[in-house]
Image 1 (cartoon, one colour):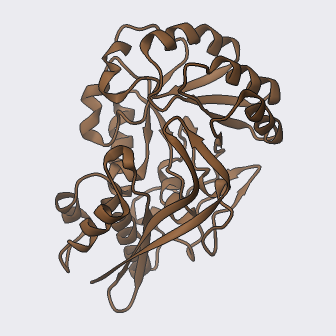
Image 2 (cartoon, rainbow, N blue to C red; image 1 turned 90 degrees about the horizontal axis):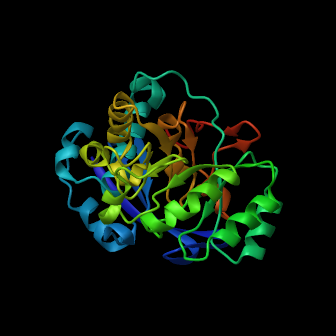
Length: 321
């Protein structure tokens, strides 16, 4: 089996800012696996928060042996971006070989559209109000926060989009005290979920803390091995394929988390429709779907995912799976 890795850059529609910094483009790695008759492909987004770079992830992928399976891949690479791209490419390759869709191979029902969040990047209150007003027609807005001055931003977004459901992503930027102070205001403003309010290494403070708004683990949850450390701290987990290391582990994590009564959120890095396509399978019936990466781009793959009033649709076979 031949492995090809390429670097692709997609321009963003506008500057995207979170508490850790800003970007104007999405830099991704595209993996193509060829067996001589069929080709499967996948995409990953190396993430500096997890000590990943384009160079380090590409080196991991190029270091793989010539022959492996999805099962053996779990031992060859750790959970992370490199394994994600290869695992998803294997699913695509297997689907093409079998002449079936990936969800059939996984024993899943045919996926349906899921309403997805649309992310408003961190900015001044006035700018975030303008973003909210522009996107007030969307049923679910996600606000990037995580600074000492978040209340004016929250108020501004709610004023700009009075009817939208709102979730908040603090990107590890708060403390337990800040969350406790903000919680009554989150309730007042109708916030439905708070994503990773505390740093992953300091989230013990969530144990015993009153959580009137459900708290979701993002940076604290990567794969099934993360689950024991979440007990008593979180109500929901955010499954991202670049964290789980692909669709194979993402599906297993979903099953395990549901068995432990966690709510499921399915999220993404900022990538193309190819990166989101496998995640639409995991998102079926999720409490929150956040697969808006392509909506933030100025350009996308050929045969991109369809987004409409019904939400994000599953991929066409020409794209993936």
